[in-house]
Image 1 (cartoon, rainbow, N blue to C red):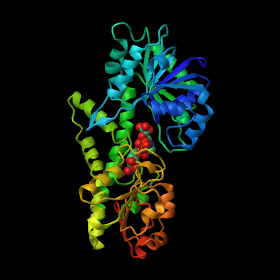
Image 2 (cartoon, rainbow, N blue to C red; image 1 turned 135 degrees about the horizontal axis):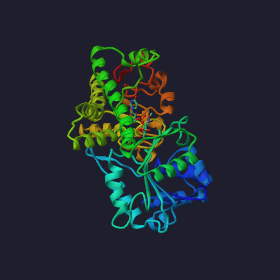
Image 3 (tube, rainbow, N blue to C red; image 1 turned 135 degrees about the vertical axis):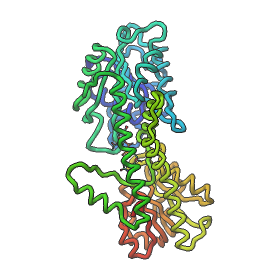
Image 4 (spheres, helix red, strand yellow; image 1 turned 60 degrees about the horizontal axis):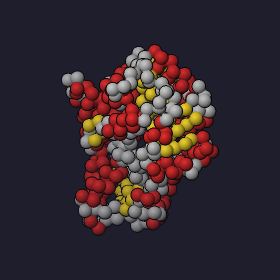
Amino acid sequence: MAKKVVCVVGLGYVGLPLALLCAEKGFRVKGLDSDRKKVALIARGKSPIKDKELERKVKKLRRKISASASAKDALQDSDIIVVCVPTPAKGSKPDLRPLKAACMSIAKHFPAGKKPLLVIESTVYPGTVRHVVKPIIEGKKLEAGKDFFLAHCPERIDPGNRKWQLKNIPRVFAALTPKGKARGLAFYKKILNAKVICLANLEEAEAVKVVENTFRDINIAFVNELAKSFEMMGIDLSEVLKGASSKPFGFMPFWPGPGVGGHCISQDPYYLIARAQESGFTHRFLQLAREINNSMPKHVVSLIMKSLRSAGIKPKKAKVVVLGLSYKPDVDDSRESPAIKVIELLRRRGVNPVSHDPFLLKMSNAKSFAKAVKNADCVVVATHHSQFIKRLTPAFLKRNKVRAVIDARNVLDKDGIIKKEILYFGIGR
Ligand code: SAJ
């Protein structure tokens, strides 16, 4: 198994860690990505993703991964092909174009003489592997189960999570045929130190991923709606959720915020909604949860405007600072970031905010945290990077003459800030 050639298609947050893990486990690894800059960086031993562990491994294993933008070069001789391309939603509809493009490349440059195992790791809706991927790869000449073996093993990754990493996160798996199942299980058991749960068919495995991520979306929507109602009731939802978390069973805390970002939780429910709709079922609840989460950036902007009114500051003359552009703390990924949506909404209301994110300095219009916060009329904590939590103390805010704080992640010292006579608005507190 170890001398086999693995080709990872898509070298992003999912594919790059996978390529590195396969290299560590002794496979000959080829990486295919359409982004030539990304390929060049990896070839030079540099990680295109800002993450200390990834940067270290890309440097260490650079000679064991041959990254290429040429499908022909990358796919030839491949015994195992793993597809890790994005499956976004465009205007709340699934967008399978990247996946289809990857499959067409594989079909066009199919590794001659090999009977490769083809695993789709991208998140898809039930039926995609069988009815979208399979026909593209088969074309007129090939037959799944004979010329190649088709499987699905949905990716699970929690960027920034130090405890749960690719190699130790349990996975679900399913294959089209028994031979594909045997080869797929052998591959994942070789690279993972985690349980691999085999499901009866591709559709069940595809459904697991969209269900587990939609589970998060609806629960986040639950607390986001509670936040709006608890603000009106004058009850601190954070404290209520902490109290509820003391229940040792039957409760799992989620936390209100400025909205749901990232390329998973904000997108995957649309895959489930769309697939169910094809079968004639309308997921009203899932759709409502999406609407609630998508309404949060606007809610944050209403709090910003309310704070400026309370401080008697004209919005167009106000120095509003948005701290954090990434979609979650301590990562450099701004996809679907609520912070970006807050900035867009502010601009529509004539406010041109200062923005600062140490993980995304190129996107920030203020390179220095200290200068960004100094004399700010309103500081918005849109992403709770660890360093923000440490630095944004009541004394620091007072020293910098900050007039109001919108703590969109409920992470600051609310009472201490209020004691400094600084206006404080949290989400649900
Ligand atoms: N969020 C909240 N409140 C919460 C939890 C999250 O507002 O209580 C927000 C976050 O700030 C973020 C978004 O929702 O903007 C998504 O958060 P996330 O923690 O689900 O993070 P992702 O999308 O990076 O990773 C998720 C995985 N995370 C966890 O399970 C903790 C998991 O759902 C998937 O394995 C992964 O997406 C994926 O690849 O699908």
